[in-house]
Image 1 (cartoon, rainbow, N blue to C red):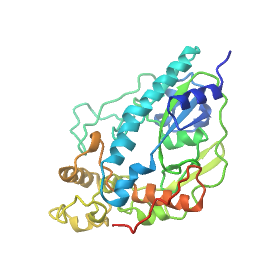
Image 2: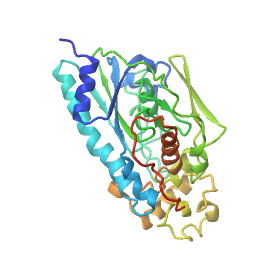
Image 3: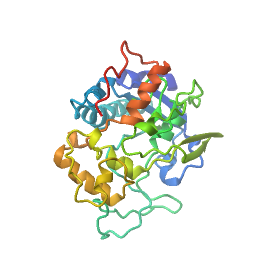
Image 4: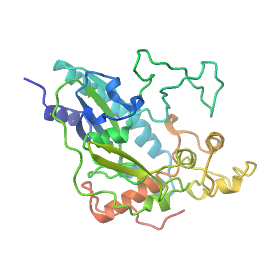
Length: 337
């Protein structure tokens, strides 16, 4: 018997995936080659999206200001490095046992893969990382490694929508999940693009609560997928990268008030008022690591997604639009920051 989409979904859930969606691989038509998974597996017919919830309680310690390692350790490192890869492997073997190939794409976490990089191998290190040499191995192909755009892939799998902060929102958990994906040549029936109740109502809580002011209220990015326009805020990626560790004093109780005193604009950085350069971000990461080391090898994420995750989640829960509901609201005491 032919393998069905429902059988794949049921098996993946039995292995531990919280949500599973399936997209037609041709929905990536028009994507930049270095983000197009069809170059990874040219015979793929479908992409399978796996979502793994971030337990709301993993954010409790940061919300209370009393424990900061649990969220990056359990809801970054554990999901990306341990839990999701096991589900991917089991599902890939299940599909393989039915005579089809499955290519797993795990979340790389803090590892920056490169694509279309043409610098010489002896190029000096930039921003703390050595630039790799990569070249296309066949004419008309992008250079390795192709990097899947996880948010667009989740959208293509019909799992929800991209919020204003660029964080992906599902009707089950809002912003509380991480993703992994799989390409397969199995002819699985795709799910439709999400067309349910609108999740992001442009409340801009993510903008006002972001400690580093990295989310623009007016500048946007737009792409078109299957005739649908998808839009989100034009994120200042370097500022986001620098401030979520966190470089802002009122979001990081481990940070001394003079941590950046000898840096140019150090007074603005510690208040979250400086648009950061790549060089500043690397220096900030070096300094913040002295005060609070990386849990499980991941950046400490000390701000705990104050705007893009927690403020968004609180707003969605107040609206009553999420399926995963709780007896008590998340924010029960005055904010400590």
